[in-house]
Length: 232
Image 1 (cartoon, rainbow, N blue to C red):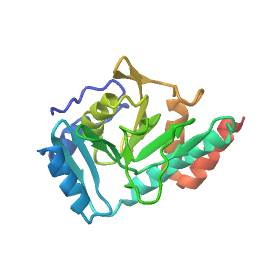
Image 2 (image 1 turned 120 degrees about the horizontal axis):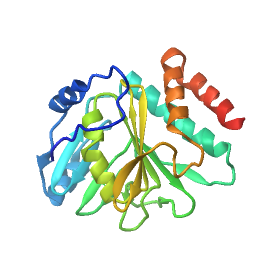
Image 3 (image 1 turned 90 degrees about the vertical axis):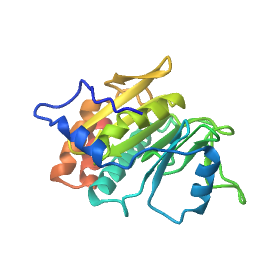
Image 4 (image 1 turned 45 degrees about the vertical axis):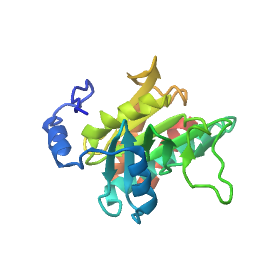
């Protein structure tokens, strides 16, 4: 896989060389068949790794316990999604962030954010594996990645995986750039959007203002401000 660094929404003064530096320092994709992937998955004792499989290529992100910044921003966006649906009680949603998605033999991913809206959410039964089998369950309506040190990969390989799985909406939260990128699926490819297609009226501008407030406040106080905005 090659890295694609072309993106139109870099804020003024943003150092695009950060992407290349991140790409060089990130774990690399390795050739691996699905059977080998299953052996690794079932044999690992890591509780902090994220792993991805795509077309006989395998990537593990295991950088130890989740960093402070990544954890704060991930929790912030889980809060924001929850608050939006609390303000729209007619919509039923289920957050399943961190769960492992698998389409056996083809693809696997463990996104930072995962949201199912409406019926058809996966349900676990005693004795079953704790993964989301996409041959059995429908794909989530939204997935997202919090990019603290992984922006290059999240804008390329992860984006390709989620588009191939036909997940309707994909978000990338660029922590260092203080920006949010939204992508909507159009004829099999992601295109940038300014307003969520899943949550009407929820704009990038509002999410980025909330993200900016987190840098000066706490994620909970930033979420409280967000709640005020969507309640007006």
